[in-house]
Image (tube, rainbow, N blue to C red; front, side):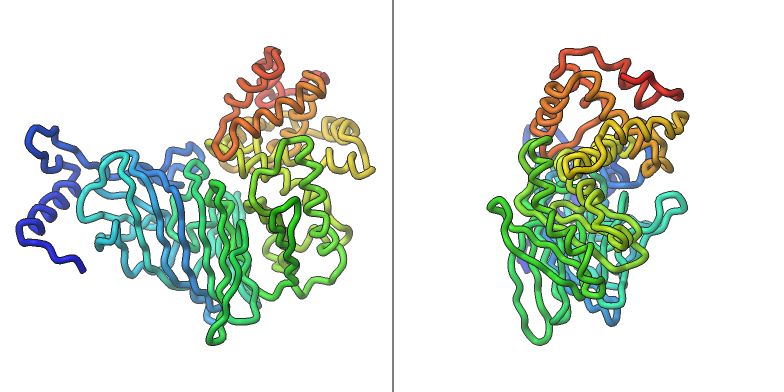
Length: 469
C-alpha cells in the first residue's frame, strides 16, 4: 500500500468529493477548473438504451477466471484498460448477477455499488478526458442466463459436463464486467482454469495449457478488436483438433457425446470454406480459425463468435450442415471485423451471411444463388422492413432472408465486377471498426459510380415487392 502525507490524503479526498458530486476539481495556478461528471449508463443504442455505457472506450480486457462445474461457481479478476472520453467522476460497467468483492482504479481502491445490472464505480479522484486508466474487478458467484420474450435466452449456461457462455445481443455481462455493446470493441486475453480433463475453449489464438493440483488452465488471445457479444467460453468434454491453416492456428471441437459423423465433417471443411469466402470478401481478417459444436439442446442456434463460431447440435443431425458453417464464417467479415454501429443495422451482418449460404451452395455444386433468390423473392412478406426492423425484429426473416435478397439484387443491379469490388472495398476500409447502413450506401455509390439510394430505399425499407433487377 502506498503511504501518503496527511496533506496529500486531504487533497485527494476533497477532489474525490468534488468529482463524485459533479463539481469542479481543484485547479492549479492559472488553470481552468475541471468539471467531472458521471458516465452515462447506456451507450445510446435506440433499441437497447441500457446496453453499454458512456464516458470511456475500452482498449483491452484481461480475464483470469476459475470455474467449478460441480458447484456452478465462477470467480476471478477482470483487468480492463480504457481511455476516458469525458472528465469522469464515476462510470459504469455491465454485470449481470455475480458478487463484486473489490474494485481498483489505477491500483487504488475505488468505491463500487450495484444498480440492477450496472456496476457503478467511483474512483478516488476524477478521471480526465483522454487519460488512460486500468480497472481491476474481483468477483465470484453463480453465473446466470438472460431471457427475453422476443430475443430468447443467452448468457452463461451450466451444462452436464461444464458450461457455455454464448448469446446475442447480450451474453458477455453474465460472466465478466464489460462495456456490453458492439460500439466498444477491444482486444482480449482470456485465461480460464477448469477441472483437469475438461476442455476450456474461447476466442482467438491458443496460448497453451498448464495443469497443477487437478486443475488445468487454458489461455486464449484475440488481438483484433472484438465486440463483447462475440466472446465465448465453452467448457466440457470435447473432441478437440488443433493444427494450422494458411499459416494460422485452427482449433475445432465437437462435443464428445455427439456421434463422429456430420459435425466432425463440417468442422473439417472450416478452412476450405473460409478460403472460398476470402476470394469473394478479401483476406480472412483474424489470426486464427475454428469452430465449436456443442451438444446442449438449449442452444438451438449458431453464433459467429469471433474466429471460432459456436454451433448448436440441431444443424448436424441429418446432414453436414455446411450452409450454416458458410453463414457463420461469412460473419467473420460481416459482423465481426466490420461490426454494426447500432442494432438497427443488423442486416449488414445477417443479409451478407445469409447470402454467403447461397454462394457456397452454388460453389459446392448445389443450387445457384439466382435460384435461391427467385424462390425467396416469391415467398417474402414485403411488409416487414429490413433496414430498421425494430427491437423485436432483429432476428426476423426480414433481416436474414430479405437482407440476402437485397444483396443479390444489388449484385444484379451493378454487375459482378462492381459488386465484388464493393465487398472487398467495404471489408478493407471498415476492417476492425463499426459501420452503418448509410455508410454502406455511400461506399456502394462511390465504388460502383451509380445512384443507389432509391434502390436501397425499396429493398430495405419499402412495404411492397420491389421490381426484379
